[in-house]
Image (cartoon, rainbow, N blue to C red; front, side, top):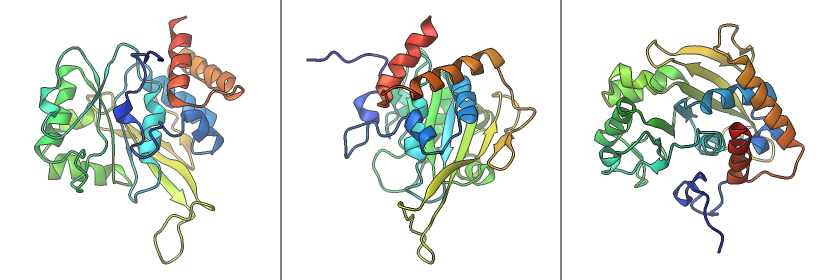
Length: 251
């Protein structure tokens, strides 16, 4: 029997239907959801420990897929914990990477809203990383759901370093349904906070990375080199990509 690597994404974060983690960041680069420059920049932010939330208005756009793909680059030594309703406030121990299926008032039993959502954001004050997704197309809509509707303190909202928003082209005219054979998903906007100041726009689809976006040139170059090298090989499964990346980071 294969021994599970403790650094792997746990089975609770796998796709509930297929029991596989879905597409990796390498797959999303090949599908042009990310270009290589943006992917390397995002990895250079996530790897040192940025909290992030992925948003999109309609379902089926790929926010959960994108969230999982980026989780492959979360720092080693941060155990993954799934945030479940009624149990979020019980997360303790050393700083973990706390992941929610979704921040939403919709019916699925694993979604967080109300007190559970407030408990999730409060974990940022205890040194935990926060990762999740929600139904929103832009930052103000996100803030309205989290800060206004759920009364999350602004300081805790800013503790989520990255908000990335996905859009899709190829929606079936007159229906709102995503026509997968012709659709194309892409990162539309990214906002960043250092945990203290308000979020600012650092990426747009048309303009690319803003001139003032914070960048660690050396780390970004290493991340780009890793992605380029791995794209040329056969590995695509999320946990396999994670193992390769953590090995490269430890050298």
